[in-house]
Image (cartoon, rainbow, N blue to C red):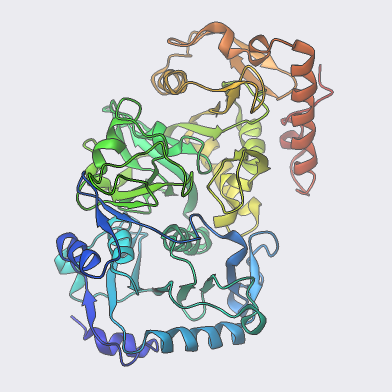
Length: 529
């Protein structure tokens, strides 16, 4: 095994005080407590606070604009360039900040499939963040560490803050990906999700050139080996609906789809736990034990009992734990080609059907649109749901042009012929503030029907406004729930809101040029009768 001090010196980390390399869970937890970085909850989990950054900070993420990526990245929106010279100066000061300090090092993989995974070395200022990344990424076997060589390094030092007027950043926080230098550097923010998402963004740029489709989705499989994918942004139910006690969990956030099937990018889960109950989400509830890390969860100082209903710090309370904490997890993190694909959305207008079946053109349209509502707490400054379109259900993490990912998905749908559904876990009976959130039991029932052939003999009705086919019945769901208009007291108000949302779809979709006319015609249309 290579000398770790020499390895760190190669990337500019010199005069490090103590290097804690590939520590186990117990040893890392001990360091967290000794250093005052967190406290133990009554469940055995470590509770930590992330300061003012309690969610991702998308305006603080940059790509070093180097020749090897300049013509491949879709610049604009979440993909903001930074001059390589500014990156170098920030890196120099960041590494200087870590001199004479202790660091914690984890070496592992992004990706469960040995044919496509990428080795990474993560260097952390904080022990709790090193425990987090250890639980979230794919942990190597002992023999895999003997000749371990990282393809990229991630350096995370929340205590180091950028100077916007000097560094060209937007705030003290920064996340910079440099593919030429093979580094990700993070500073100014303690939100651990930045590490996880930057690792996935790294994969999402590289994998298309390796004939693998990267996807922001969860995945599970039945006892029959049939795989299902769940696309959706944070808060739409991606983690909750894939953590099904009757099925085996492959992963809850990001996957790759190769010619051999699908594989998980990570070795753990990062679940929201606001309003968590054992009855509603037993697997997540039971996973919050020793070895897991609870971020910004409020708890009683005396008993250390967590209060998952208290969102006074943030609605984006999170818990990270290894995939093996889920009793029916697929240990390999690998599955076959999917039989079912579910696009998840949380519609704040309350007008989308709870579930609809899509043909390949409709599926491509919805995938490119990526409609949902940003939910409170998932990003700083979001306090109530807002209608949004996130291309490919993960625009912040997909740096290439959208058609790169959409074409790959369409090719796979045509080749492997999975059923594709749009599932609305948002509002029913009216918009946000008037209607109510779709019952989890109804969403679960609709997913079960989609995965088990429950809609095979059901009549479908075409919805002209949204361009999709809606089932007239579903086991475990009242028939009237399936027709969103029937849940509104004011039918005229429903039509106004539905046509408004359809128009927003069209307005958003206008940015895509050169697409097949059949895909454009397959989307929502406020004038379609």
